[in-house]
Image 1: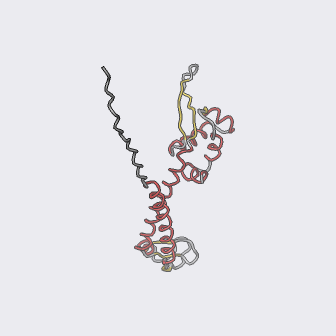
Image 2 (image 1 turned 90 degrees about the vertical axis):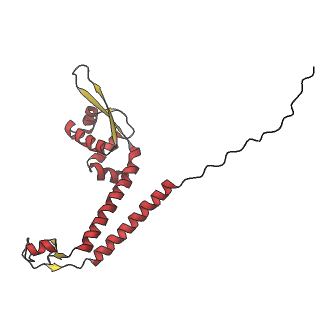
Image 3 (image 1 turned 45 degrees about the vertical axis):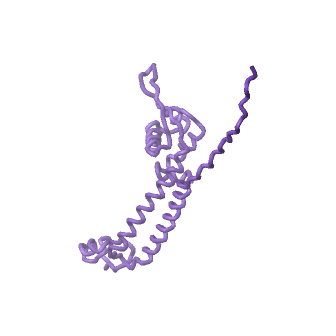
Length: 190
């Protein structure tokens, strides 16, 4: 799951960098580039993508000799779960948008599989494939709509279950009431 999330938010090439950063803290970008045998600009590009996804943090210190800032990077694995659920939410919204388009449009396809066009675009090409010139045929997308509806229902259920787990409140146990015992008031003898 971790690699899939990293790949989704920062690109497949960053997985190797994250693997390198695991368990390390405040590693100089120059050390990273040297150890991974990569150009510093490539490493910086990957680090910035990871930073955009909140998977790394940095501190910067000024090099007293050169006057440049050197950045030291640390991997933040605790943000993976949040990103995982954010990706699912975005996927759900994308599927809902796609289902809406599938339900409210008529599509035409090339018999050779070159292209799929909405009605308005098919008209502009005189119902001919712009790739091969074959006549376009109307597509029955009922199966696709069913498939999208199923995926939406599954994702919706998964996200709802997660939200239910997060919002379940446990009522606090009532505090024990201290019993006040009546102490006999001792009278001082005179």
